Length: 325
Image 1: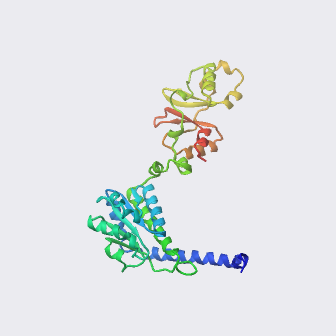
Image 2 (image 1 turned 30 degrees about the horizontal axis):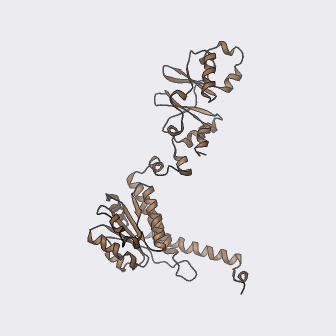
Image 3 (image 1 turned 45 degrees about the vertical axis):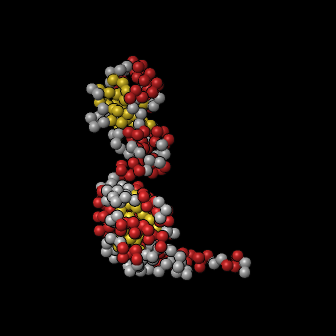
């Protein structure tokens, strides 16, 4: 038999793919309709934890456990993954009495987890179990039992971990998001744990990207335009902020200079400036500031404090360099 003769026709392949999604999707709906009985208690237990959530599992459950630990940690619940086999060779020392253990085993009889279970019982460490068998050894030993609904694996032979791992992963997400809500986790908290990559860029605030201090092109309202031009040229933003009594009252742009060439050098800054300048505050997300720059078709804007005093300037290129789009 050749390789090509063993490949299913595209229509059969799509039917098989759809069947997998339907089986797993239905299992998720079943779990949503009948949540594990101990779920609320497990959430309370983790919220009260003074240490970390120690997550462990073997094989596919281990991969799921790593993701659950990562999601918990990035959303305000300290957590880490401990490999069950390594735990038996010294890594049990990573677990303290202030921690909570979350162990995952579809069968509930994973031999590699036995030392971890025994350790939690010996030192009275709260144990949360995720399993498909309520009568398994793991579930019998657990303080809180998160029972997965009875559902067939989605693979063609009914043996490969598919539906069971999807359910465990989704249940981990449910734990993490519920804890986020309980803790009042905010977008700015999220940005603390995601400083890199696109997520970090999208969560950056204006105060992180703006130019401040001597870099800000500011002149007094009564400053003559000769001096104003020097400030605009030396600062390099193509813009000057007009200040009166410490507050930003207007802005001059390169476009304003071109529109007022007649007798420009004989006039004062306030005579050329546009009033009601476009501004943002330092605590605004850089993505929001970029949207404002685009909406007004301008290249830079001033950053002001709560009293209207200028504290910085943000250029569109600052946002683009930081990866804000």
